[in-house]
Image (spheres, rainbow, N blue to C red):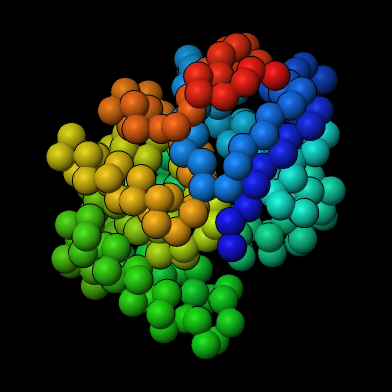
Length: 228
């Protein structure tokens, strides 16, 4: 199932009331490839977390299909993410006590029993595709680039209708990064997945259908779309 995105009146404030992000309106069709760029501290990751329903202080509406994630409670947002959003975090978010295979297949724990074996198989296949053959090794022994590949395999194995990525190629060598970009684009084109990626990687941004530029917490450019 593909999900369109509709944002209205989105605002995120600091505990002291300072505006961190303000986005009056934004729409995206299902299966869109959207890049987000901007300087450090511009609000890119804040926007990504708002799209995932990870911010308690976000105001306005972020609607994926018929679901406004900002209108849900914390448990409702968690359930929605588990079923609809795959995330690639910049700091990986891996469990140190688990091996690569178990980390990559972690979302199987939140799926119906009948779906778990297939998800574990997809996780193993994604790890192999990304060059991690030693999936039985604990991630404590992995380099930063290897950890990034585990996090990417976990997000892609879920085959969620929405994939949100925070600097997905930052810890990868150029060859691995280019293969990942090819895989992400193929995932969107073949499965109708919506990909939204924060990145400084010009090669990744060139492959996007649309690139948003964020500065000072505001959308200042929308290449390939209409700036609201």
